[in-house]
Image (cartoon, rainbow, N blue to C red; front, top):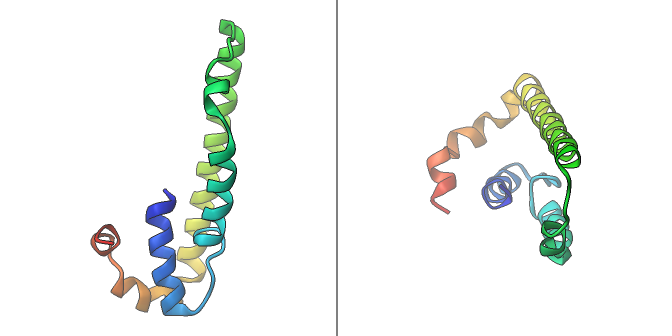
Length: 101
């Protein structure tokens, strides 16, 4: 996700002269820092009974649902409040140009 969003954020930052802190390099460095230092093989070896596994899956699904709601709210806010200021950038950046980085 960060690879695609980071490249798009970089283009928008260049065009508009604003830092997209949570979509750009700043947040990417934070995410990769703690993600790369965690040993996920230890977590994969944790044994859980069926009830604990079901509870864990339920909690993970809840976090993903919250994240989805949050990103949808961000998109709605952006469309409603910032659409006019992003039009010049949107015209220059299409999804095909994002994938061509």
